[in-house]
Length: 264
Image 1 (cartoon, rainbow, N blue to C red):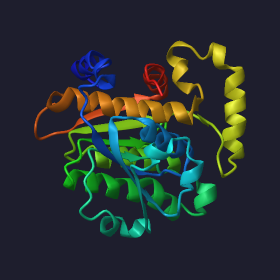
Image 2: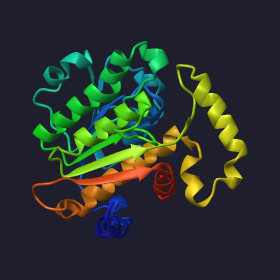
Image 3: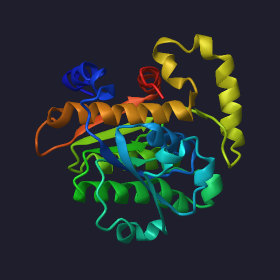
């Protein structure tokens, strides 16, 4: 993030929560995961969000969402195979597109299947956002994402970042969280062990090491929502120019800072 971009975001910190922010529509993909569930509930409670469209491969238990009945009324669910994402989203418009897709090699079984979920689908969603004139595309990758990494997981995440950076979307927000804390439907022993170990080292994880602290999935969701509203509040000035995207990368410590300034 450039100094100028950072300054504009700082200037807008108070503006996204005031009444001047116009109502906006969002599309969320990945609403059944740790971050996605929290983000969906936050979006439904947000009075600035007038419509929430969720693209999911399976039905969502709307009754279990932490939102009031009238808030749930603005939710539209599209159940479809992600291999036919373009057809499912045909004629849909959204001011903000959130991508919270992600899996593990253990769950995906093969590198090919992992790459489909963590690279192909998010990139296809970003290309949809570009065609649809979306103002903000917000995606979760991971700490250490690097297209030149020898680690397959980190390399795929980095390749996604590189590919998205070439698109012409006014605002691209890339979130790179550390180990995620929260209840999941799928058990991930490695993440659980890492989170427990990191908690014990929390008080020595300061300064440059702070970005390695584990972070709650709901805090990542808060930061994603906050950054999008900041960009919408800034408006046209958020882009570096009319032809290129303003790309912002949020490492885990910056995600935590952004979440602190968020209500709801």
